[in-house]
Image (tube, rainbow, N blue to C red):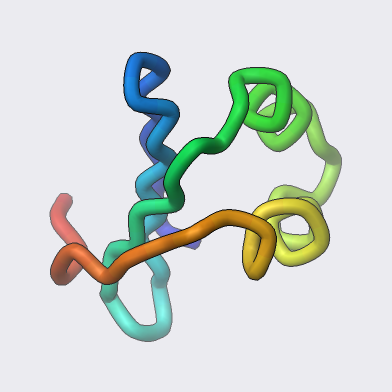
Length: 65
């Protein structure tokens, strides 16, 4: 992951990936999950085990800096 942003009002996690340069938005991600994600020792592992394939997502565009 290159970058992540979380918008608490709609509970949307935006994730920009290094390899593809694409940004995906994961919907209805609870704040508790985001807190655990940010506190995790290995963010990539936490993402793969607790976010990817657990929340509805959509491709929204290329990476931005």
